[in-house]
Image 1 (tube, rainbow, N blue to C red):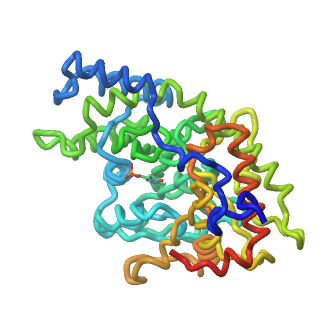
Image 2 (cartoon, protein in one colour):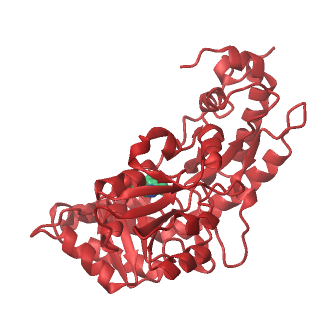
Length: 396
Ligand SMILES: *Cc1c(COP(=O)(O)O)cnc(C)c1O
């Protein structure tokens, strides 16, 4: 058998000869922005034109009145919770399958996380469980749009308004997405973005809080300003974000095209027994004229009953050897924290299922076009063809 037919994990030549795609890459517009920082001296200043210009640009892009730049998406979630007056002793509802720092932020304030399950079709917060989760102590709901999916915001806002609860909308994985004709992060009382090193807009670190409610913005400013800024984004960070925001829409459209192609190609990829080994989450998310998803990660279900006998972890390791960044998704929060720290609604079976079966594809490969999506499918195909030998390789 020729080396080219063997999966890379068994010594074959990776189908993709490039290393894992780099992010953020070397963009000329970012180089220009950094050079401008050097020549105008703003790189070394507390205050300058860049943060102000970025704030304005983000306000316009999202059609909101207030954007507050800050040090990270994690800090932004904390600020958002403080902005809606979450205090020690309160309860904050979030999905049991969510970013770990969201849970930690609730604890950091001294509040108690209340975990609800996720919807089995979309893997997003199951909004039908909100009513059962809300108590007299509930102050806020954190809603995260994850892995290219979306939480339906209208029922969330209806429940929240009925009970006088605030909604923090985490758009860190959906930056620039359009849901029901508005940008992700602008349907809740306060929205959150991350500019972390892997995110769709990046300055290595950084984040932002957005709101149309002046009193929320005011509370956040009071909290962050201690004679000096406690959670700052720098002038240099703002400078590199501005040109990326200009191109976000265009790049999100390219990524979405890739996801649709990948999804079609994966549908045709079944094992000898006819099971579809990887099922994209996006197939379960309706899209219309007013909707445009964004993909920080592409969520995929690894078929738990697949006839290849491959485990999810072995499969993702074999894909990485092909230079495809396909990794296990989040751990479900109820499984990685002491039960004393949170309250739950029900047994959380779907979050537990996702804890074991979700894979996520990192976004940079989606900018590479048709060749890359075909390489992903060809990699899946040859790994499955050699499933028994791949399963027998030691886990590293
Ligand atoms: C990345 C991310 C954040 C914030 O991350 P930072 O690295 O702190 O900027 C928050 N929520 C979700 C869902 C994320 O993916």
